[in-house]
Amino acid sequence: MQTKNRLWVNLSILFMLLSLAVQSCVASHFTLAPTLTLASSNFVHCAQATPFSFSIPSNPKVIYVLIDRSGSYGAYTKRAVDTLIEALKLSIEPGDRLHLIWLGAAEDDSQNWLVKTVPEMGPPLLTPPISTFTPGPKLIVTATPSAIPTPYITYPVLEQQALQQTTTAQAGIWTVTADASSVIATNTAIQVDKDINKQYCDQASINNHNQKLIDDWQAQRKQLVKDFIEGSLMPLKSGISEGSDLATHIYNSLYYSARTIRQEKDTNLFRAYYLIILSDMEDAGSLEGQSLVVDLSDVHVLMAMVYCKDSILCQKRLDYWGTYFKDRGAILPTYSFRLVAETTPYALSDFLK
View (cartoon, rainbow, N blue to C red):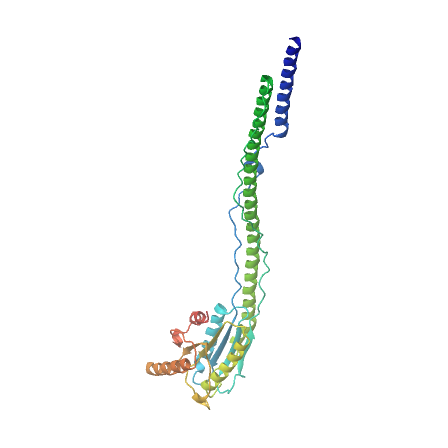
């Protein structure tokens, strides 16, 4: 009897030690990690920022201008030049090619007033966008306690009690593990949010940097145009000889204009081609006249600063030259025939745009 009681005591002590060991294991190996919060991680919110697109200006254009300086138009030559230069200030861009030709007795375009290209500069070197990622669905961790195998043998009462405590302890381990997994999942989701926010912040910084580069580049391009106008166009306003030509060879000048523009087309450097004629549109002295083959396909044509003695004469010239240019493939605006009072720098600028 004494031996049996001693056995009970020993088993009780063993069960208590086993229970303490399990609890110690749970406490030492499954302590919950603290949950992150945005406030506790010095989180600075940034609005969503996406890389902006920057389109390089389209290819430049060719502007070919015939300026009448014959005796019949001499009173308007200087005014036509002034109006043209003011219009070019509003419309030319870096890379544009200008052909300013005197319209008179010359049989070719060697009597040029100016043939120049507006200086161009390359696009700014922008910082590329950062690499982006799309977070997947947030991980939700769940834990299912492993099933404790059902014993197939009969245990004494004390051993059954020990088995029940072991099962409870193991179930407690799984409960703690499930709680830890939940904390890990929460912390992971917050870290993903932080990574996305950092992505927005970094892209916003790049956008600001690139925008400054673009602004500086555009300012430099404007300065190039300003320098070109002051250095090349403004000096041309002085010393204009009015009425120095005794003839107005419009047909011959159009023939050489079309040839020069065709050569410019062959370079594939330009997006559009413009022909402006500042004249009274009264031919005088052309040798070949309409027999010349003139190809003005896809060329925008405007007759401006036109002077006529009366309205009937203006109407006849409008009808005649309108048909002439259309038959040769030219593109005419709605108002292709502008009289002196209707020709302003803004009218010419709008045509060139």
